[in-house]
Image (cartoon, rainbow, N blue to C red; front, side, top):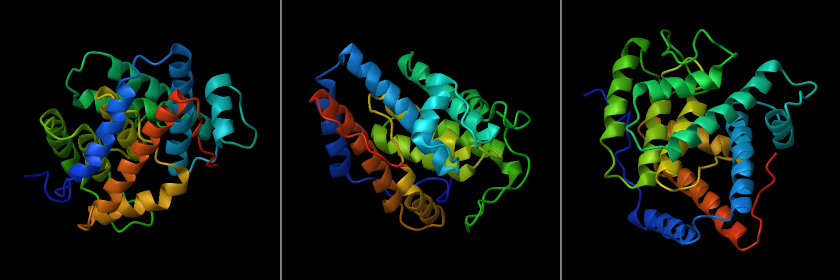
Length: 268
């Protein structure tokens, strides 16, 4: 079996942790549909925040404010590279596609969906590899994780999609976190693996009525360390807890907004 211990997380999340998230989601559901202005405001904020943080995790130096200028106003930021600008606009476009897919009929995700998501991430940056599985070995800088041989990637992705299509018995949060972990561990692309995996996780969360998970720039080292620990056969607890807390924060932002409060954070 290709999807062995390394590719998946055997240790399940605690039922009490998942129940706490479900309770917050149920509380949020009592307010649906959200007031139009509030829903639009939150959607715009999350669009910029997800773009800013996901790119920052990969080394993009645009600040939150600069990301908003590039994405919302189309304004070029002096001193920043063309690639950094494209990473911002591409991620925002990919997130728009994710939201469209989340709002549409819940058809089963297929490999072409993952490839399309990746093609949006690398559009204009690396068109030769956008939406295509890697054919060369890769390593993660500073990591001891050994990534799969490129010859194995197509079969690993086939097995991943089969798992994705048959894992609905898992709690939605656990399934989304597991999908992110499996995809980033297969590392099917030359570049853009993390951004694609986080967008996929959030597509799954949105489809099940949860807000997207934001992994903050300040949590970058904890995030990378937790992933590597699990990928090397250690405990996945740190990784799972980081994802749980990121979803808690997003739910808290929605619930606070409904009370006229603001929990938006400043994390440049």
